[in-house]
Length: 470
Ligand code: ARG
Image (cartoon, rainbow, N blue to C red):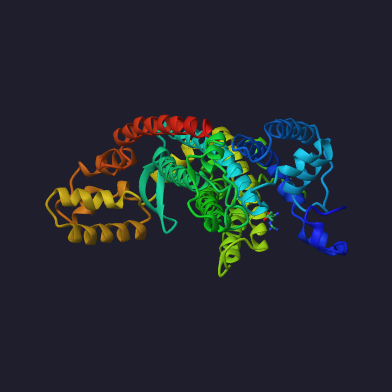
């Protein structure tokens, strides 16, 4: 196959070199952006009188037939043509002749690939934003449904203080809001138009980069041609967003693995979201959560790989930069899958309200409430902590919980303790008493539900804005 750059060569490319050099197997994903970008470029060339106006039209029509062929699965991608850019351009010229051969005027694959990647990222960011909002909504819905579901809260994976399942879910809801904010930052980095940088130093022709930017809904244009073709910060920013999101998803995954174990028994996954064992008939495994936890490592790897690829790379384009794609595409697929499957998984999961309530009725997670009770009776907190510690030790020794110790027994430790303690020790009251802003009190979380709905409405509005600008 004749190369588009074959002029200065007198020999064919070695077959291994063709195979090693080619990116078509993965960059064919960019076909829509490549074609749309080329149409905008051709239109600009015609508008500026750099190519004849009829050629601009012929190029557009030709590219549209190629787009239709690719979408219909009727396009033969060639490894010898290396990448999506040359596959499309070579086919175009085959179809329309000289106008096709004019398309690459004022353009290099260096700025072309950068343009494709920016456009592709904007589209993916909008799709991920939509999935993220849908998942956040599901988390908020589960939280609302379990506004009164008591459970133990943990620190060091040891029972700490009573909370509600709603409060636990709202913690994730807040983490995801930060992911959304970071995703908008990714959009900012992607929303800058590189075309017109040429290979490195712009062009001698009177191009109009701002016209291209407008055609393709970019709000900004790269100010420096060398930066435009060297920059992969936006890929790193995406992978950093993806890594943080996956870190959050791996934390909820770990909790779902724990909660669905017999030892906890707090949740049961729907049969459609769990898997069995080929040997042990009793098993119901949380494979999705385990896989999400596992895939998190892979996404971190892509971030590290990209940072390393760019480290010490001289300006401007170097073929190393072709390595920006596979990890990026894989991270996109992983994030999208994770958000989609998790949404349905948590909406269908059964929360064992009784099991959680039972756990909290037989533990010492109300010990802080005993200390707070003493503080309210006038004892300094440090002393109250000491007294309470002794009460807990006494209870453990006598095989009792704090609610089962009599007032007479308690009085050995503090005369301040009276009958009214028992109300304060009830898990429901322990939660309700924690009315500090951001605390788990029912009334506080009810306010957070309202705030949550407002946040989601704002995110939806932002999403509509992104979609109008892809
Ligand atoms: N396939 C290449 C990439 O993805 C396109 C740019 C190639 N540029 C070049 N000068 N060889 O990076």
